[in-house]
Amino acid sequence: MPKRGKKYLVARRQIDRTAAYDPEEALSLVKKLATARFDETVEAVVKLGVDPRHADQQVRGAVVLPHGTGRTRTVLVFAKGDKAREAEEAGADFVGAEEIIARIQNEGWLGFEVAIATPDMMGMVGRLGKILGPRGLMPNPKTGTVTMDVAQAVKEVKAGKIEYRVDKAGIIHAPIGKVSFDTGKLVENLRTLVEQLIRVKPAAAKGQYIRGIYVCSTMGPGVKVNAQKLTA
Image 1 (cartoon, rainbow, N blue to C red):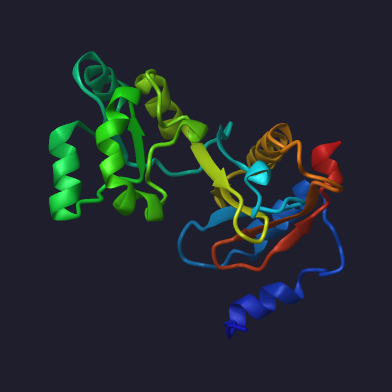
Image 2 (cartoon, rainbow, N blue to C red):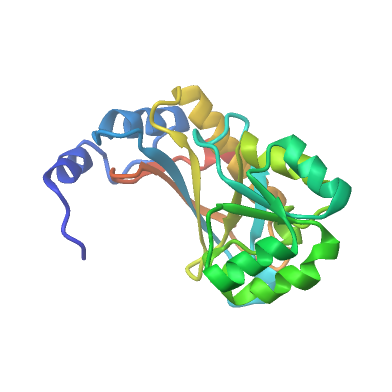
């Protein structure tokens, strides 16, 4: 078990570990206990009743948070011609085709956080699978990053679109804002995420689906949220 710092331990003592807090109270507590000298990210941790070992119980996708995440991500678009121009006009940081692919392959360049591609580019982009895949940067139709509407895709990412994917333990980790956000905005972002996860519930998932929700800041302890207040 990792050794915890004094500030973390002091913060943890202020949380009732046996209680499930209302969303507003939980997020207010997360804000109160955030003591780092930077604007910490607030993360939601959602335990799902799925078995990720089975393909029909995978949970993956993307959602636009109503109040964004508090940071703007760097976007690369693989596109040509008119679609390339649309991406540039929409605010993409990097746009290109063969020359960008070659730069990634030959120089190991990864100066972007989200990659979007038009379907016709995926034949070439697929060559980057071993580089982009392990880093979660490969464009994917499930997350809306393989699309002909590149302008809309860029705007959504810039507005606060996040991707989510269940891990091997059946848990979703997702940023929902910064501790500088108003509590109400954090609650709305959390509710939007949970509602999206419910919408994409796999048909093969049995029993209780939402098994636990926690929120925490980058350096702070987790606070359990009363899931019924978000799923009712």
